[in-house]
Amino acid sequence: MRFCLQAGGATYDEILGWARYAEARGFEAFAIPDHYLRGGDGGAALDALAVMGGLARDTSAIELMVLVSPITFRHPAVLAKTASTLADMSGGRFTLGVGTGWLESEHRLFGFDFPQRKVRFEMMEEALGYLRAAFAEPPVSYTGRHYRFEAFDMQPRPPLRIVVGGTGIRRTPELAGRYADELNAYPAPPEVFAEKVGRARGAAVAAGRDPDRLVISSAGFFIGGDTEAQYRERLEAYAAASGASVEDIEEAMRVRTSPHGTWDEIRTRLRGLEGAGMSRFFIQTFSDDPGDVEEVLEKLG
Image (cartoon, rainbow, N blue to C red; front, side, top):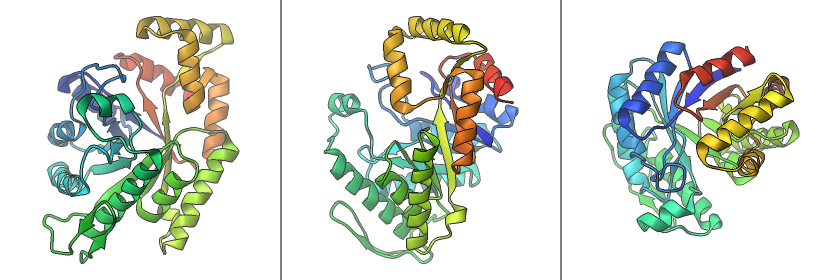
């Protein structure tokens, strides 16, 4: 299993600090989320794709990824041109993450339409078809209900690497298999995660793609302890620092099945995901202290 880092920040310098830490520490990739609110409550947030332009010039080797950009924010034409620009600026190190969007409050406050989940999946599928058509060699036309692209020699047109991410069990893996280079699926019990992987690879085969070339990854933040008592102590400290209740934090971890508990339990969960097909994991930061990430790396070996 290979490790990557996902981090955010209220300022560009904070995010750049994490990116340079990740690069120096030897992480395989560095990802940032794409939200117009930080924490869902109006906290300071920067535009992720603009930030990527800075990181493309201020780092030198690490893969850079948006994990993931809601299709509700930008027309796929904007994603296409921005992705090709970032690929140029980074020397080919940029990976575009695409998702349906889920944070309703940022859509309401900024005035974005927030269609029903079914429609958002339709939009994401069409956006992926649009992007693959635009970056094909040669480009081909694409027509959907929401988006259309007329085949022409769009320049620049570097190779485009796409990751599809989300919590879905059926549509998300299927779309990743048909269109993406990587499926980023939230942790789940091994049998559920294996089902996602199977759907993704089956969809790749049906689309005439090589299923073995599809990278399978996952992401989550860790709250752990050497003992159950230490885990509870750290959970309470994190809840106090974040202004949330212990119950709310545990519920959030349950919904996203983030690895938590004793470090032995966490290692067991990660081995289960690895056995189900996962090859890399994005460690999500939950503080501004790299020492917390160092502890995770030490405990996970």
